[in-house]
Structure formats: C-alpha cells, structure tokens
Image (cartoon, rainbow, N blue to C red; front, side):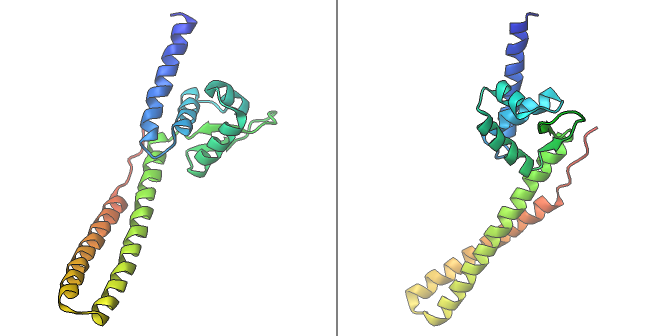
Length: 168
C-alpha cells in the first residue's frame, strides 16, 4: 500500500469517526480533533494537532480547551517536553456516555424546574383570574404542563438509571 493510499484511509477513518463524535453535540472541528487524538493514541502538541488538522494553532487551542472541559481529552506530562501535550481519554465509550448522560440530566432538570415555575404562575393566575372561557383554557394549560413535568421527570429518571458498561 502506498503512503498516499494509507493517508487517504487514515483521513477516511478520521472523517467517519468524527461524524460519530459529532452526534454527542460536539462541533465538527472538535470532533475531528478528538478523532485525530484518539487514532494517534499518543500525546500530541498543539503544533502537531494544528498540522494534522490543517487549522491554526488558535483554533486548535480553543478546541482542545473545550474537549478538556468535557473530560474527553487530558493534558499529560512527558519528561523533557516543555510544550503542553494532550491525549484523548483511553476509556472512550464510558467518557462519552457519561458526558452525554449528564448533559441530558442537567438539561431535563433545568426544563423541569422552568416548567414548575410556569405551573406556579399559572396556579396564581387561575385563582385570581377565573372567568368562564379563561378558566377552561387555564385548566387545559395546567393539565398539559403537569403532563410535561411528568414527562421530564421520566426522562431524568431514565438517564439516571443508565450505567455505561466498562470497555474491555
């Protein structure tokens, strides 16, 4: 296999894996960066990542910072190397699942709280403004918002029950 063919296959692998990573609400640029780090399997400097991605060091630095914040990439130390090195977490599946699960739980919890606040406003309006037509509309809204809160509670509960298996 020629070096050019191998490079093409490498690029296809990065591209396809990046598409999967994007499904976890990661930008295309950061997904490619993560894919490169994961496939490389060894720590890389910002310069090396910049060359591999064909992006500026500033863009790579911002992407790395976001991936570190999401606990998908870690900064590592190597004796004798003065530049920062970064490496994709070796426990890929577990990290992605934990990140994804926590995002869903946090978002659902926030939405549920917002809906409860709206429900409280609705209750207050129901008691103070209850004429015939409005009363029926408020009652319908109150029923719907109760259903939405229950729905969000179910989602939150389901995601809290998910325990990612360990990779072998």
